[in-house]
Image (cartoon, rainbow, N blue to C red; front, side):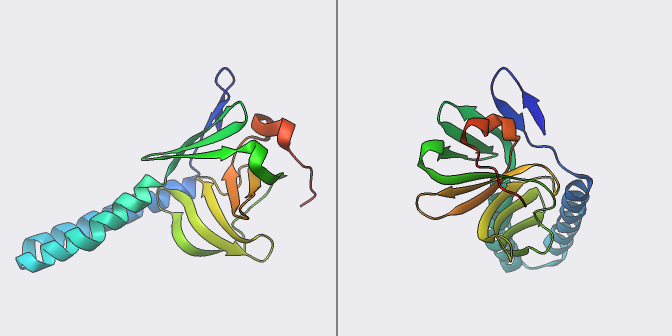
Length: 168
C-alpha cells in the first residue's frame, strides 16, 4: 500500500496472485467472446451483452483504488463509486494483521479478479464485506452502528486515533 503523507491517502497495491488472476480471466473472457461472436447467431450476441457486460462492469466497479482520511470520515474510492465511513458512527474499529482470506468463503464477489472484494464469510469474523487487493496487507475491521462489518486494507496510522487494540 503506497501512502501519501500530505493528503492522508493510501493507494491499494495488488499482490502477484491478484494480477495473475486478473490477466488470466481477462484473456479467457476475451477469447470466449471473440469465438462466440464470430461463429454464433445474433441472439447469442444479445445474451452476451445482457449477462456478461453487466457482470464485468459490476466487478470492475468495486475494484478499490485508494482510501483517504478527511476529518472524521474515511473515504474508500473504487473505480466507479466512493464509499464513505463516518468514523464517529462506527461501533468498533480494530486493526488486523495476517492473512484475512485463509479459511474465508466468498459468498458473492471477486476472489482476485480486479481485487478481493464483495461479501465473504469466515469462522473468525462471520459475514463481512471485504475491500482489498492484497491478501496480506494490514487491514481494519469496521463495525458500523447498523451492524454491518467491513474489512478494508488500510494503514493503521491513517485512523490511529480511533483504533481499539485487539490480539488476533
